[in-house]
Amino acid sequence: MNRRGVRRVSSVDTLLPNTDQINQTVFTPDALNATSITVDNGSRFQVGDQVRPGDSREVMFVTAISTNTLTVVRGYGGTTKHTLTNDMRVTILGNAALEGGDAPAARMTNRTRKQNYTQIFTATVNISGSNQAARHYGTQDELDYQKQERMRELLRDLENCVINGTAPASGQTGSSTVRRTMNGIVRQLSTNVFTPGQNGFPSGGGSGSDLNESVLNTAMRLVWEQSSGQIDTIVCGGMQKRRINSFITSQRAFTPEDTKFRDLVGVYESDFGVCRVIVSRWAPADSILLLDSSRIDVLPLKGRSFHFKPLAATGDATSGLVVGEYTSEFRNENAHGMVKGLSTT
Image 1 (cartoon, rainbow, N blue to C red):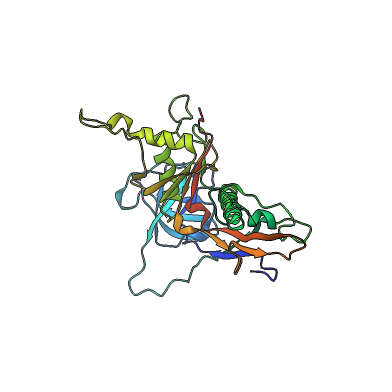
Image 2: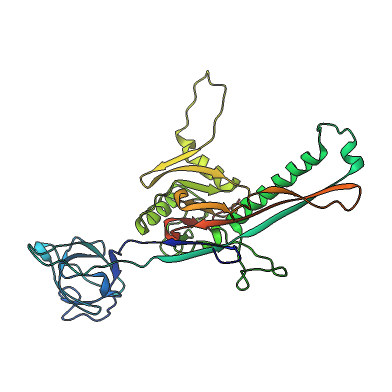
């Protein structure tokens, strides 16, 4: 943290990428037989790599690299050649080292410094001497009761800010005249943000924007392909939670002896994760959040978890401040996702 103790800093590391894209529009002699291929990032490749273009079954073998240009053997091992196109994804299957060869040059990724800002949450309690001395229905200590109520309100606000909070574009450090706010989960998501029916993402049910299993599974699959994370938590509002509950409607069966009707999905299990489904009042109504809980923390500044601080008496009243200073730590942004633009009716 910096000297003012207002910034939470962590480092995020990533594995060496094993995918890239072709960056070439004209191929010689043609896109089916070209052996010189330009990619976006030649540094991701090594001589001896086996490379697969797109989703084809062709394997190409890299024999030389010049900046971003790869010299390859097409149809390696008798595989069927595939027509190459600009922006086509290429996947590195693995590298074949020489027997008895020298050690290859060391390669590594640089850790990325991530940060967020702490936000101070406060509420004042003020109870007159008469109020404290009087007997109250349902409570023995009015001061203690008011402290509990203000604490519940601040915990509610903390949850809301962890999901929806936004830090200012400038002046994030804050001061005695500038208020400091944290970035929440929604604000920090950028890589895996999907909208039904847009950019190749499948449409949902109903009018095309209703949440269904196809939408949910596709989003989880794309996050799984993007990172080494494991989605284990789905956070959504009431409407989208009811949509998830409806996934099992057609398979539900009852016997004449049943007296309880249950319409609830608490855990959603798919090939891409076993997820606890959490309903939150503060989740955006048209969205669901797909989270890896091992990469998210809500943390107080040291010594600044919620507590009650008595204030100096200036008359016949007891005053105090319920205060806490928190931030959200959101690691490996591409290990999480969000589906937005869902129907809310």
